[in-house]
Image (cartoon, rainbow, N blue to C red; front, side, top):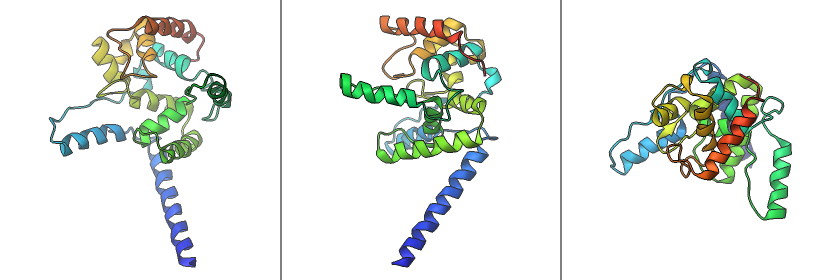
Length: 224
């Protein structure tokens, strides 16, 4: 029985060391691909479908429009600079919404979304959520906020086959993410909660309302 515990402990320590190395390395190295891009590519091969070249190009944060940087913080995580990865005010509000309105609402911070998009596949399993929390703690310890935001902007899902700000900007506006206007940045950000349902090219009335609110809030946000 003792050997089982020892083996289990060794496996846990090995996984901890590997993930620690992974997180520290990505503090300095830009990921050439994300898990979701790799999965979609592998899936197309297994299903013998035509390979679709993913839209993905990593850009340094300085090469991404300040309007988009502010818009993302305004829409996704206004307390990004003041929390340590988890916004307990939002978590509390999300729990209250479940009990009062019988409705689920997101409480993920930019840090949590970054952990998800950089290290994990999209799923709704308990294991993935646990891993997301674990990676969120690690990146908050080893990365600064600017690196977290840079990673988020480059790896977030911005629609089918579109990953990151540069790919999204090229697809939706035929320009580099560096040159996005405030209106374009706000509209791109407005679709982020559901980029596969909402359209940048054909925005609904609701999306325009979200865009207007983001435009209003983004000028109050810090620039990273």
